[in-house]
Image 1 (cartoon, helix red, strand yellow):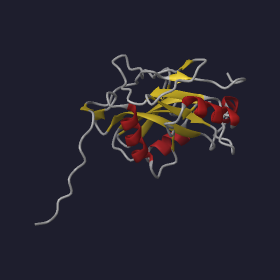
Image 2 (image 1 turned 60 degrees about the horizontal axis):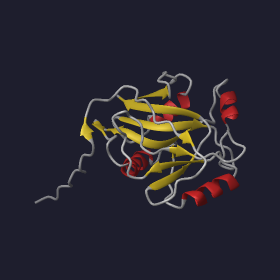
Image 3 (image 1 turned 60 degrees about the vertical axis):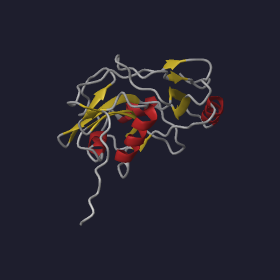
Length: 206
């Protein structure tokens, strides 16, 4: 008898592709959260966007829900290569410098012309292949996101499970904007905001 490969277990809840989802916005705080409950990511200085992929086309929404696909054509083309039939990706459009930093003013200048330097950094996945996954733990959503971005030009925002103060010190030493701390097992609640999101910002940064 021929061996049959088992299909991967479906995750999340079967649902139609949602419209624009109000994004979770980080709050600035003075003290970095510590403990195993938290994971930490680099804070990027760019445009917060939400990418909707469906019917072999990508739509780019701003954080206020405006369709800016025409302004972010390069990112839309990059998103078309995501390994999914449908998806909703949360991320930030940036202009990365050689040293890994990002600058919002540089991004604004890039947008005045036909930029080829902008890139999408993706940090969350809300919907995948016909299923709403917002109730899954954050670490699981990010694991699925990393899989579907493999081989594309979209950057994946890694999470670090280290002491928050140590992460923050490294970020500031490298001249980065700051860090974003999130609850590792956090699900997106009914009000569509991520639980426990925080944004410590390095001294001298906005």
